[in-house]
Image 1 (cartoon, rainbow, N blue to C red):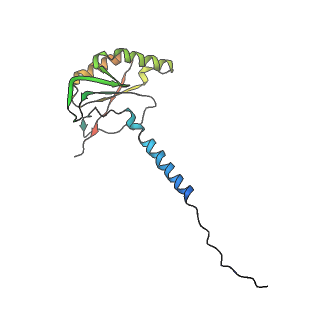
Image 2: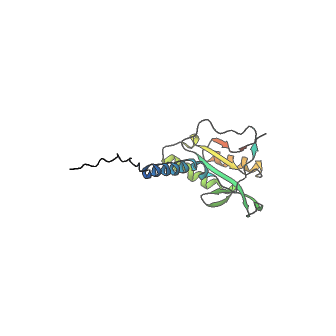
Image 3: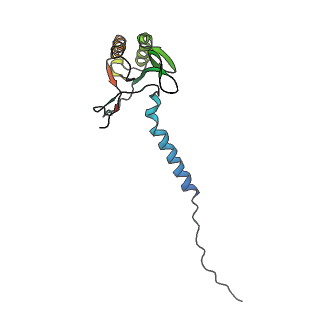
Length: 156
């Protein structure tokens, strides 16, 4: 009887699971990196300053308000009235008091003092400073005391 000898076959590695994992990691990191942009509104054109820097410690809970103008597709201001763009609504700055009171009640229900919740103001560069000061006064009447402003960092 004659026995044929065969050369050992080279094992093929199936790369499909590796590719699946790589795509899942890419999707995961894309979702994670976009969480900061959820609270941003494109209608708000932030001012730029050379002293602007990201916060060292991010607050666990914060109230982010976008203050800007209604703009057309070209980016030109349609309405000179500044609005707070909040949950899909356009609310004039001086009429935001009831929303601050509502937010304060929500934080109190979560056993948080509104004094400990920072209010992040993302104001358009063209919004008048007096309107921002009025908004801060309204927030203080509702119990909020911590405020921060967002700006883009100016490169020199």
